Image (cartoon, rainbow over all chains, first blue to last red; front, side, top):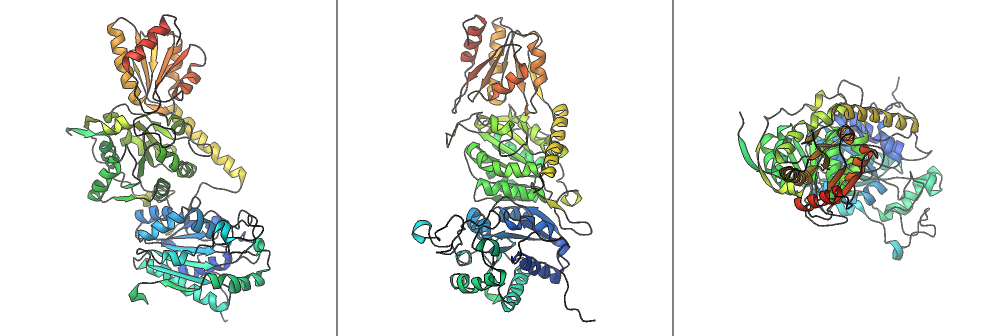
Length: 248
Length: 355
């Protein structure tokens, strides 16, 4: 019989709590498949953020910790320094990584910490009910920017991949999207590479994944994917922002 | 037979922790404790450990959280404003039932305060400190030797009750030098033998380290499980020194640096025929309430001497429970009590001139 679909071994069978149409489920699966293909599930330790993915430990079948808000890269640092032979990754949203945890990700990159960071950017705070994030686009309406984000009032969104790529210690910085099948395939390869680099002793590796929040964006799932293509991608261009010369 | 060495308090902290099997230190510079990270940065690589200077106290304590979750004996040190920053992480660590060592060389506050010795972190050391219900095993040494001996047992004690441990000292204990004898080197623990640590789920079910559950019934249960351990610690871990208490008519009580002043006050009073005694908590959590309850039946009153403004006295009053008057000798802001001023207040009280 032809094998047309298989759930990732690194995922548990638990039903996810994510809203219908949310891309966290897709991204979890890409991460889990990468871990499966590299055969590192039993050697991998994950760090969950504060935000919608705080419950990631329910879905990834591997050792996990739940960090304080924004502190996943430093908690991962502590874990990696104790277990340098293990694969340590964080899974963080944009409120977590690009707002309250900015110092932690910048300095983890500066140290060239040998970890992998999956940074899910959906331009909004999901868990708390759709407040403005540092990544919220100008003009985008959220529950704390009800008239649309105004640049003169609270600035323009921060581009983390561009910023982190300027840091000498960052080894691999890439931005991907999961909005189309083609983007998905590219995202999968990129995530796998970010883990592979760590297995080769390289760090810091970060993959920014443009994602959706149908519930708080007030858009249907399909429409949300198109919103990523049409509105997020022009401001947050996809591609590798940094990779070591030999890896190119 | 180990030899006695002249050691600065802060450096002794580092050496004692290493002898206790600590191989990881994460910290951030702040006066008056900088000799601790400095010592660890040169000493830990010699014993196969890891020193890392973090970008902030917030980052440092969360590195400690990660290393403790990974099963290692790990520590951080700081001083008051830095400890305030660490409180978020300490709350998570306590809620995750981990037992790192946190050293606080207290300085004058509030705010940026100053860099002189103080005891004004008593509340944040003994009452939890961050959000939620938790306690730290809080040791308050009064000499460098005692600080070394307490650090040496801190990891095992914390691990027994699944609680973090704090050394509550101050700039005096960190900066002064005393003769000290170090205990022998313990082997560091093996994280892979831990039954809770995240080490990679090889051949066993996955583990999670967290201080979080969306189900309030489960958080409620966790709180009561923690409380059961506090009660065990209160039964087993109280340490207190009772100095000249057998025939004491009036009691000075203090911990740490203040107690050194009180000891000389007791000695001077005794030489002059005044029967003073001293109760000195060595653990300020759990608090040695029994020593006060026993004394309350025999003495005229108590004078709490603290380098803070009425923090320590609260626990003394709770223990004495109104049986005898408890007076306050407070020297906050980074100054140190003076023996003769303490004695003058005692005489004033005993002569009925009030506190």
